[in-house]
Figure 1 (cartoon, helix red, strand yellow):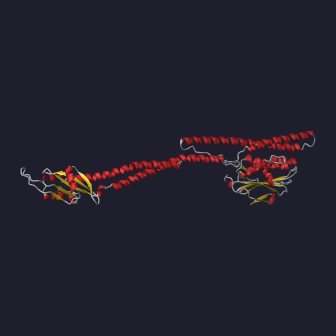
Figure 2 (cartoon, rainbow, N blue to C red; figure 1 turned 90 degrees about the horizontal axis):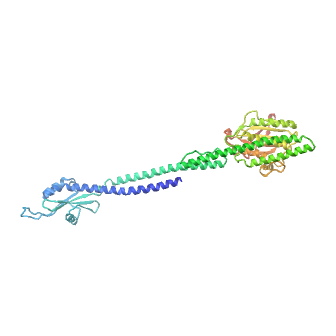
Length: 475
């Protein structure tokens, strides 16, 4: 649009300049010629009084030499022969020619016959003005004035250059104005398109300044209103998913564990069956909510929490259950604040999913540990247990997409994986030093600037036993 507007303005301005400049240049040239001819006529009229008094050659030579054109050898006078008239007391005289003329005798005779001034060209350049003048004897003398070509075109070249400069300035100015107008129209449209693309890519903070023409301002306002509504809807949906995850799954896990301790008997079996049925229904609801969640993930700009605080809070809850089942629990690395670009509910949901798997898939009395390591540009959360382990870790990571085959929803690790990948991190499953499974969550911090760390996915870390029973991750 911008270049189209510039091209149209360039074409229109060029046509207007040509339409006015060419005729104006021709007028300037004609005016210069008329000025030169008018000056020649004034010089020819200067000898008229002398011709009306006398036709004496000596006096005419003196009169011609006293004029400007005569002194410049650009004047010639052609006086016809005067016949004798005894009755009037007029003595006859022959023709008198003063100065070297440039016109032919025929042109002089035609001018004398017509009785009006004529202009004719001269071979080699220039023009000649032939001005008829009455003399005292009643005849017609012809005064010849030579006008050089330089005098005819004097000032024309300068005028043409000025006209060309003015025309070029008008064209350049119009193109510049059209370009600015095009930018004013195109930039808001480009910003609107970029914001729409950013919103489609999941950057929910994308907004458009309400600038430019009225139509684009209206479109920008409508886009911003739509984006705000999308953010509100997604926030409500995310809160619903988090609420389902925190308020239903965790109490259900406790209820299932309590039901498992009821022993044998019809009532106990019915209770366990009802709990299992309820858990399946809740899993179906959670799966539906997860399928409807946006692809932006929890690591959106502006989200963040203290990982140590959240982990300590959730471990207080799970430690009570672990005590009931006789599980030994170890927590390390949460003695100081560790900021991560993950929303508090999302981290809590991910931790509950990993610890819930420990309680669900390991026998009672199995110890587990949670370690937090701050690596500067990333935070590593390790959940280890001494259970039987996972035979196929890759299949376990695919359950969130392919569905589980062991009775679970397969969404627990998928929740954790999404949290990690939303920050540029990853999720890996391996063997722990306790003899069971170790789930390692790499959460990118982007150098503590709140932006996700890119390029960390697929990074393989090594877990070592450190002093004091803790472990540290090294690249």
